Length: 407
Image 1 (cartoon, rainbow, N blue to C red):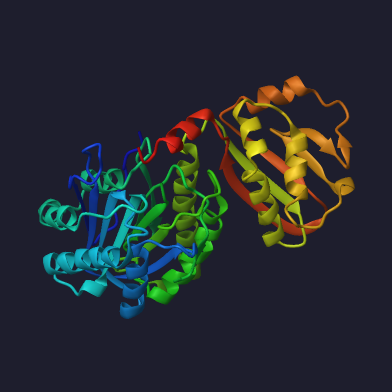
Image 2 (image 1 turned 90 degrees about the vertical axis):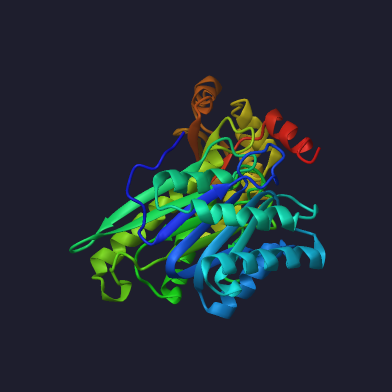
């Protein structure tokens, strides 16, 4: 089980309580509050069907232009496909939180995760908020409680930290997330589930945070997939308290570069944790696609392979059926020539310019694929396009989890 070992970003407090929303009876309401108003940037799902908290969150971010005082997350109920009553629940949650934390309702961001289409009991959620307010603390235990309460089918808490040294102080980053199934994020600018919350104590304007977030998300959360299903609730929220006293606008370029690297590291660790804890996952597979005309084409091929049930089931039993990989790449819709294509699995070449690789040994590749993690590299030519995409196998356990999810 991961744990927090470094100092947390200044200017935030966290808490979690039991509201009785989760059938398990575990903590299911998580709250994060900024001591002073935080700058914020967010990326939501681009699914056309969105949950009520996404609709309300978009409206609030637009109204405040990126100012956030508090975040309220409930797990066990997605509050999606619940109509006008679902919107009312999210809005009432924000109003209640605003009263407790001394801010406007628009300065509260709601999030939900869990089953779709079931009304979210507002009385359970709002009655839990005062208890959460009493428990707010700036401590590792409180931050871990927040990270634990947002879990649904996750089997372990997912957290990451980084510290960037400045001239006379340091800037800290803390990230946590949930997600194990219904993972095929397609996140865009403000416009089961993956929820990601990133906290830092740098001082930066919302416009800067938006630019930072979009670049980091594309290489991490937008480059992973468990099952290819884009959730109705996906959210990545970045909050900056400014409590370190380090201003982005005044920081030297070297510090800015270090901060970008640190934020990317946190996002990458969290994205990897989601795939590693995917529902029923026994193998984590990194797809490295190269040689396309551009990066977008490379990612298209990666997604085609990552979402192929034939590829994913073969990976579950370490079956080196490389023909499925070539086939999935071929129907991705990206032009390439098999005669210019090579495929390696775990560093062993299996396909070489249109035919099976010379000296191909199925037993050797099978052993490579028995490892928990390995890489499949596909080169389709000499173009500059590249994509690194993280995915996993599809197992019987995944089917069991999702066949019985609502019952």
